[in-house]
Image (cartoon, rainbow over all chains, first blue to last red; front, side, top):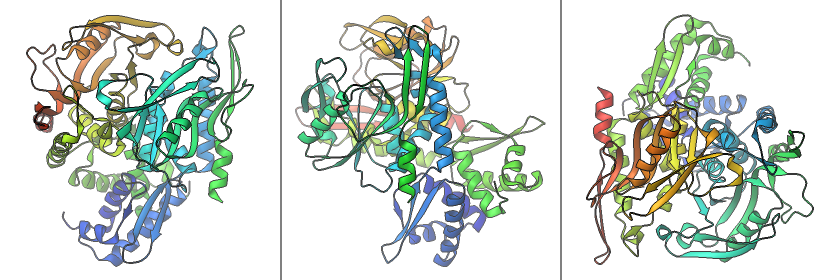
Length: 279
Length: 279
């Protein structure tokens, strides 16, 4: 790669770091890549760090020592997090999405990669200080959010299925009781899709009583895996007894009235969590 | 936002452009954002453009005139494309992924967001000159690739289902004949998930005879939508009669021998397509 001047290095370095979140990049790597002295690279990184932090892009951790380097941790500033949660609430309150039975159509929200990526970065910020080895979700509506979060944490995604396909190899299955309908259902995860003892963040698009999340927690026990947390895009409010109590949500439905065609949503607890992480 | 020096502007501008692919950003936007003269912004963009093109990050189109600005088009250089296709072939040839019946386990590949994002950028490069309004895929294994491509093209994703859920509202369903098993199956897409007349790129993880792709094409007719192209991650080789003939693939299985535990894969036609686009 040809020798680059500072201005060129800053552009390429920003691109590189953004594409390698949560990865330790050594000074030598950049020094070789740009045929520049480590002292110059250090100065570049000071500039990048300052701008990343000022503009709320994320933080740049410096790991000292011979095996050290820098690590880009995506972050979201409180104001941006607030804007994102309010944006979601506003979208949810569009009465056009009310379906028979009081269900809400959400595929337009889940189907917008840019919005999912922003929400994914918000979750990644909240869980940025925790050791996470994998994201687990259930097919299919949890998938977009799971990938958006996993991209920002640079971890793989494990997808739990409600059916059994030949392309999955041996699977581990459990029965669980859906919290709201009280029906017994089955969920399965391919044996090779998750390492034993992994630290896992559970993700879903919607949570009512939490039966599905509880099912995923039980399934994780079969893999001797640890639940680091649960993140959902939207939670329902009118729940008598929730089966999980520690979770992070972006928005909460405070009213869904099919008869009056009224949907109200309020921000979930993610902003509190974001505040805690900053401390 | 506080006034930024050139070095700071270059870092923030790179981040901003990377996060807004295929979107026209006016000079005034940057000029306001950084409280800098348009002439300085123009110089910044010249530097960004040069590095984006030299480093194979993408191109920066300049749209002149009062309503003009710049547009970042993600791209992949031939060498990187070659590396990605070869990387996929090598992964596919790992005999550990052979399943009974000659099926291949691919969830580890599909479950890695970083790799999917790179492959998504490759597809986005190949289709960068075409007008695409949406990506369509079928649940569930096509979803990761569909989102990866859609992110780089900044378009929404429509997910076709093989079942019917209450959370989708009214759906349009068709029957189709699976090309390899010859069974009649049903696929459905939520009415509101795709606009009439949209220009659509069809995406899937795997294609054998092409029955699913052909089904999606038929479904698109119901939406009066246009098929811009078909992109698949992996195609099978031993196909007597393919039901679609114009598609782009990253890799092609040239041999899957369950008895001898042998899998061979060769690059698909995407590199030829990449060469054509450059011209």
